[in-house]
Length: 275
Image 1 (tube, rainbow, N blue to C red):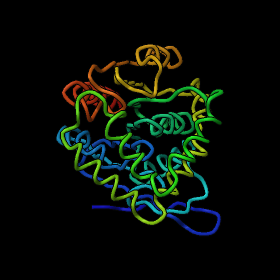
Image 2: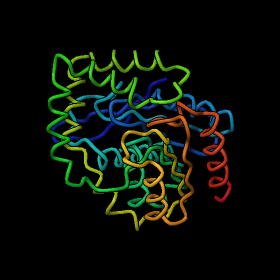
Image 3: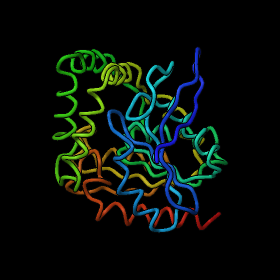
Image 4: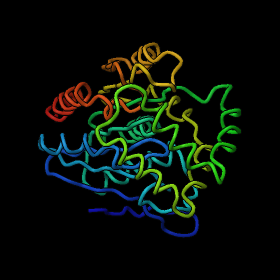
């Protein structure tokens, strides 16, 4: 059942959607840009079966969440994660995919007492760099109407999921397409691409105390060298466990659940047993 978390804006209260299932220690998941919380359904099923209470959080302006937030991006998502953990009674293990990973890192740095562990799927731990302005200009064009929905759906279906296809790939892609076709949704995604910046997470890495499991797909197009990026994660987050997943791109937990879910389940069991 969909629930909503009230979040203040300058002029009103807006809502982010989430769903909670199961009983036990809390795990909160958050997807990446242009995706839906249902992307984490398989992971949530596995953790609920293991005896955890799992909350799947929707990004602002995505899926069932409201439009019109003043702020979007990593820091805004981190504030939503913190608010949800407080609402549900933490601490929690945070599982973030893509931009959800730096958001989880920020939450862990700002409120370490609320975070038992971090699972970072396809994480971004570097700042924007010199190519950020050019990328934003490109996104303004690519995500314009009337072609924006088709462009994102094609990129998501193909490039971001190179390798093994998720079991529910067609249905999930159709759900993304339907969501973005709703009034205002593509414009909100486009707005997110213009403000998204991972520098706030990169600046806080030395404050992260929680144990980390980082997972990267060997075919992920968001990295020049996925293996090297995973090594960089281990360097900037000392003690982090890392997993490079063959035949997977940007969504390794969906593409190779046979490899990723056992690692995540073992990690979550370990960090929750310490409490």
